[in-house]
Image (cartoon, rainbow, N blue to C red):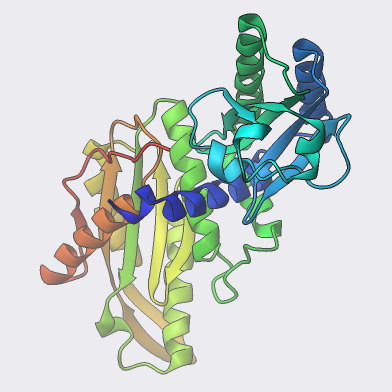
Length: 344
């Protein structure tokens, strides 16, 4: 079983996906409120609420006629459910002591997903002891969770690449790389998820390039001179990329280029062009230095599942190693054209 399939690995993936949702596609409070209010009315419930997954426990978003205090910790357990689940307080030793369950005998929950396909929260209604939902109420509650997913999806699609970039740069957990002014590793990774998901929803291909400055260009330089070479490489790439392409600093001497919509048949030609763009002299403080770089390319023609970023970047890393072993200052294309993602 891979780390992503382990409960802890899945939990961390969901938390990261939730962070991206709250940054790029969160709904206004009143939109969440409409859903919870409708759920309470539909189910003739004592109360209703929407919770998001948190590091520990649940993060209450909105609620109707709630008991005082924090909601019961349902998300970490019930997000494993594919659809509606019923929790009976008298049958669950973990829930029974919770203050809310002194008032509520039954809680009905429906998970909802973000645009990437991760289950990130629950739509819940609470009933008195002995209460139950009719078949129509269960169907209606499930439909409301689907409506919430659709609203998050539309909000996500309304976020273009420039908007996503601006929002991520304003997010406290994602800063610009101070040397290049590009998104740092965390920022470009979030944009990778954003770009891949948009391409999947719009039924377009997706590609990326992992760029590494060749050691011959930097190994004999001072720290300041090597940093100047990286700045020059970033500037040359920015001047060459298409509108909608995205660039970030991935590691010390590596950059990551996102190429949404670029087909596999075009990718190697674009990679060769980027290699040519990067090649050449860089003048610093009256000295000229030779810049060159190697690229690892991955193109996905069919995007049928949620992104497995680790698998995609591993394929790019393998292609980059092949470019380096072939003599550097060149691009190599990974044979991978489809990444099979784990299901959430």
